[in-house]
Amino acid sequence: MSTLVGKRAPLFEANAVLNGKDLVEKFSLEQFIGKKHVIFFFYPADFTFVCPTEIIAFQRRLKDFEDRNTVVVGCSVDSEYSHLAWLNTDKNNGGIKGVTFPLVSDSSMVIAQNFDVLAGEYSYNEEDEELEFDGIPVAYRALFLIDKQGVVRHQVINDLPLGRSVDEALRIVDALQFYEENGEVCPANWHKGDDGIIDNTEGIADYLSKH
Image (cartoon, rainbow, N blue to C red):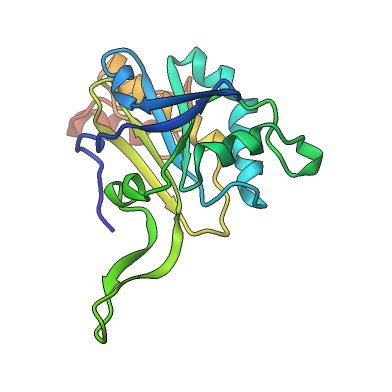
């Protein structure tokens, strides 16, 4: 599995659902370059168990991301029609009705492959050279923080049973924006409002002497 941190995020155009109801073609993260930070996350599949808890948790904190000039975009290998059906299903029936951030369809699994988060891979069998998929044809629970230049600054990848922390996603957005605005790096367990460290030996020594 590759590390994309420090590299430009892979480009894509795909079908998506916006505002919980609008089907669009050729959705792309390029529209945010120069304008906003992006939290782009993959989840395994619609109509599952852990996935709605994550998606609804992101929706509940969506204003906190928006206040940080950051957009949230979800993606799975399901079709846009599956996304739409799920978005129209009540929460008490396992749905995610009320979610408004974009959900991207990666039914070809190309986006997950390009971000290297697919929970398996294609290969040819030895007998008749037919293309087979080895593993589970869904994406891991991967999350990428992409800056305004389209560069990945943070990534975290969980195995399928392990839900993510929305609070940690917000914290890492705060850390990146603090560094961008102040030029100071963020030490262990840094949270918004904490001191940063001047990026030199003297600055680090001074910080450690006070903590």
